[in-house]
Image 1 (cartoon, rainbow, N blue to C red):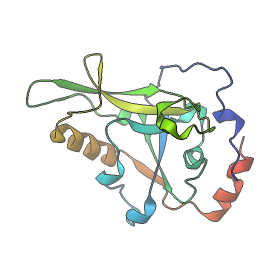
Image 2 (cartoon, rainbow, N blue to C red):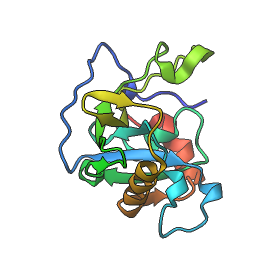
Image 3 (cartoon, rainbow, N blue to C red):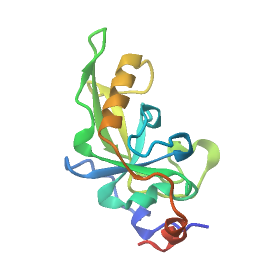
Image 4 (cartoon, rainbow, N blue to C red):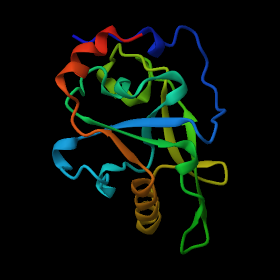
Amino acid sequence: MISIPDRLLINGREPYQEFEPEEPLYFRFSSEHFPDETRLPVAAIRFPDFSVNRGKESQPTDVLIPHWVEFGIAEFEVRAIPLPYLSGDGRKFEFKVVHDPIDAKHPYYGAANQSFENYAHSEIRAFVGTEHQKKKIPEFIKKQFRLKMSDNTKIVVLLCPAPIVETLSSQD
């Protein structure tokens, strides 16, 4: 079993929302569906509430913990998050990264009541004004977001090699 590195434990730390434009953000993707090593397909970009790990608090391989060891790893910088888009009805959709650490009570786990902690967990969320948008986002906005993110994301590891998997539990 992969142990959780100390850097991912919350240990009473509060989230903080200051992100430098060059801070890397990491996420995992199912590489078996994406055999092209040169560009991450649009379908690999989740939206809304795109889950990532912030680079100041994690290493790229941390996105594979606790049980996604056969996934690929991708990265982009905060500055790659798209600028606002206007919808056909005039709403201005803005995208912001929000530091949202995960613990056993986090909605990410629902009723599963997991014990995994991830202090580095963050999400790129869509907003209209100050209101977080989870539903009824126009398809055009989703498509534009995914295209822009695909253009600005690089694949770090297409398929996590065995040596990385073996060392995940020893990283600190």
